[in-house]
Amino acid sequence: MLIHSEKEMLDYGEKFAAELKAPAVIELVGDVGVGKTTFTRGLAKGLGVKSELSSPSFTISREYRGEKYNLVHYDFYRLEDPGLMTEDLAETISDPATITIIEWGQSIQNILPAEHIIIEIKYVDENTRELTLK
Image 1 (cartoon, rainbow, N blue to C red):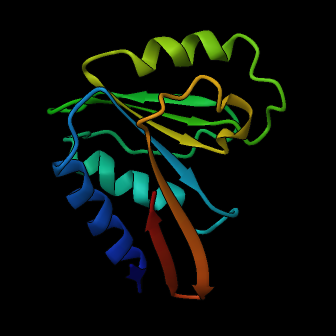
Image 2: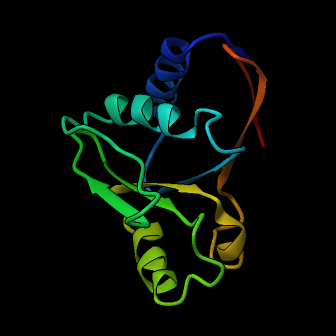
């Protein structure tokens, strides 16, 4: 699927949220700046999150309360070894009221459930991204 603007990415995330049932784990795969956090903002809106969503690049995780489900957004970009974060992640993944978003999840693949959703986002040009669900 091709996404042609930031608004389309937000809208897609919001529509994607409507199909989710917790607990669910979504791994976002793509280079820096490709739109992973933009997708997550749309997803948060679709879950009824009212607070402003920001990237957890420096805090590793952020938690948001939604009307439908809670959202926990992880970014393991800066961690070669997630250490104690694996325990936190394992608890979050099993929470029946939580949707879990993971960016840069290479270091925690052994914790992720086999049935998790993978969305690969590739840069096509300045305004266009290609999304592939796996």
